[in-house]
Length: 178
View 1 (cartoon, rainbow, N blue to C red):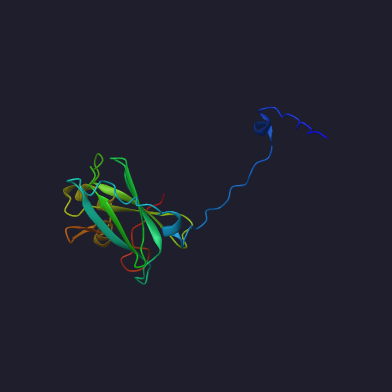
View 2: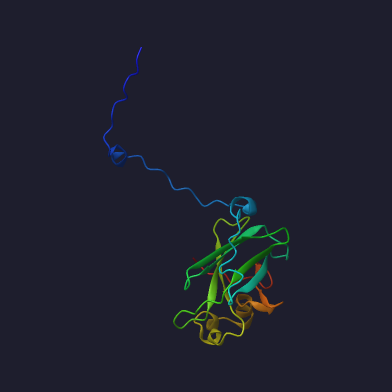
């Protein structure tokens, strides 16, 4: 009674295989963002002790103004900073940020990715900074109406910034094709 040796396969066997796996469609991740994707604090793009640090808060809301269980990711491409914040029961998210440098010919901004229940793909919007002189000449903002510009621009509140993301309805966020 012994062990039978397994026949050896050539090392490139997998590469020669004709089997291909089908692509699967995107699937929603929610409603468990706080459990699955926001386990540890990742909402500080800069340390709170940084002299340029600014608190950014906001709410993720549906078309009726009700809070959404979701997750917000911020990207500062110029400084290569990234952060993630799940929403709480009232839809609030919180970040510590620094105002980024604007790219050539563009106003300073943060790119915002929204993940929420019912979305098969994340949604992309932007946060522009209030009172920024470069906002007037920004190639995106300059093409939008006043209401759309207001939705994309954070507002000053309690010594920090406030930026709400409304998924649809009055005051809905401006989303960009990705």
